[in-house]
Amino acid sequence: MKNFGESRSLPKGLTSEEFFKLIRVIPPKDRTAKIAFLLAFASGLRISEIAGGIKPDGTVVPPLRKEDILINQHQINIWNGKGGVDRVVPLPKGWKQWMYDYLPIKKSVRTLERKFKKYIKLAGLPSHYVFHSLRHSFGLRAIEKGIPANQVQLLMGHSSLSVTNVYTKARPQDALDKYEELF
Image 1 (cartoon, helix red, strand yellow):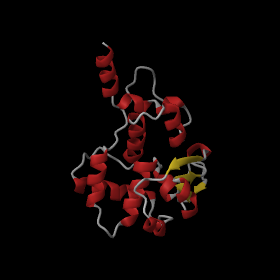
Image 2 (spheres, helix red, strand yellow):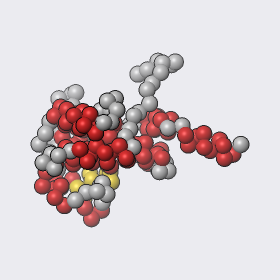
Image 3 (spheres, one colour):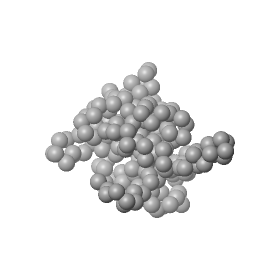
Image 4 (cartoon, one colour):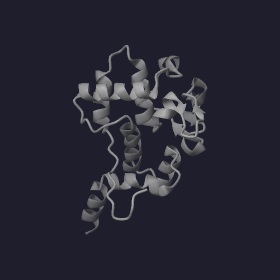
């Protein structure tokens, strides 16, 4: 927890153009990376919700499964996410039938993070991006598109609205534009 007066860096998310640039450099044979990146960027999933892993308390989190995706409802069920929270997130608009064949993703969290850094470099994108930046991209885009912060909170599985509100501060241009409009 930061103390009063300490600075907190704002979330860094990829723009849609940067994301498409990233996706284009992934070789066709590396479909698992493409799927994992899409799920984080377009559905706001944490890397542990995609690949599974072990929580700090020792609880094993299984990777995303085919049956968690409800194609007809255009949604994904996330079970026992961070903080034990279940939630529903949107299925990426770019989801294709062939992607089911790669679930569950059989790559470790570390492998996906390493691949992300490799492809970010290949795409010529800023090195400050990390895998979690894809999730930040989801939050930033949702706020920019006008989804109310409390609904973004639900989609992202945040424990409180104050966590989600960091996305409202990340790109102050909206506030500046509103100021110009009103004054």
